[in-house]
Image 1: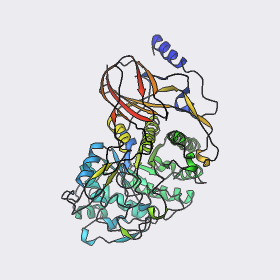
Image 2: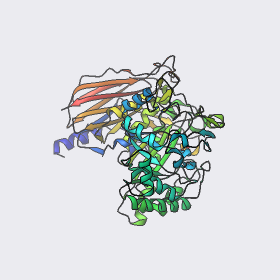
Image 3: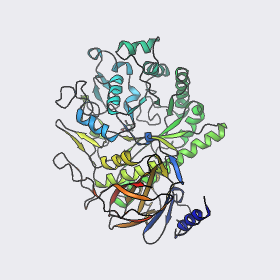
Length: 546
Ligand code: AHR
């Protein structure tokens, strides 16, 4: 860094005002407390990570109406010749989702992948035990791969390490990835797929720490089973990216211990470990306090740091040169359509399950999650919004059309505009207090939370800059002053905001635009720009820079 640039940078940091209280976890995320407008310095050469877009993937599970009447509905006037819903296909394609996890979820832990391949009239209807539903197997691996190709997304397949064996898992990989001349690859060819599917990312089971999971086991048992499966799979193809099951949430008593023990067993054979979490504005998690709710993306970041620390610990123990990456392959808001009949298909085909309706405050928090994932992109390589359609999803179908729920928009902005590198942004912002009292222990924190949450990406290929900004202030507009170093904004390419008077407003098929983006007023491009972030808002600005 030149002396002049260093002086400017240090001067920028010097305006930081009051440091956050010692012990706050926010300093490590690049936050400082200040008085007056929020500020940040953006410097092209200071970046946190090259962005792997797999960070912003999604998830499709055989659950409720996700597959059947979500992506696949033969006979519907909206379906193409393969039975895929054209409207849903167009939405997912338009989003440019980079990777799609399939087929579960809890479903995968009882799934026999062989039931879902081959002639459709020979496929069995089975009683699916994760969600107590009827599974006709009319949509299986090959249909999923066809759908992925049409949508333009990469498959992330999981196999059954619950009721299934490593042998069945390896056979599945052989079926998908080996060219020809072996039992399972030739079966794929018999099924009409000459070319291998070449699936590169694989989940070694799902949530095996969960008492609700079919085949749940101890960390040591799972770690050994995962290692055995992974070792055999690497004989087929050593380059595959294999993801071990990490903790399913932060409240299970085994949280972190599970991850350590699993990795002690299988560290050498895997590339990443999964994280899952779901959030809600509930008495136990937030005290029904929307301000606390909008800070939950910072809890996600804390989980990322904790699991990353466990990975580093085991790496140190094993003296391994390999650093694991994280796969946050299930995250979303989910608290209303949960448990009881919301999760019990009552032996029906394509029952209505987990059909969460999302409102404005959920969308703002999902914006926060986008920021957190991007901020942690150095460690988290894969991420999956759970899920994509009908089941806790940004898209919802009925017989006639597809609806964009409120959370569609922040997800779409991240996918569309966040490209290239994530800049190392230090945000100074006024803060508000959050309280631990009465909350579930994993969300119980006495701390101060910045009103303004900012993430910025810069694409070195074309100089385009993306700003994603959350204003957690429920009452008022917040100014954000940005100083640009080594890059000069020249033109605004897009600027939108998601906001509204009613945090509980939600889109419906009758009123699909109640929560939808509207233009954001932005200042003229320059080396310093002051953005006015509306109260209760998540905003995107996309700019050309010199
Ligand atoms: O996404 C819904 C369910 O949540 C998944 O099946 C499971 O993995 C998680 O508990």
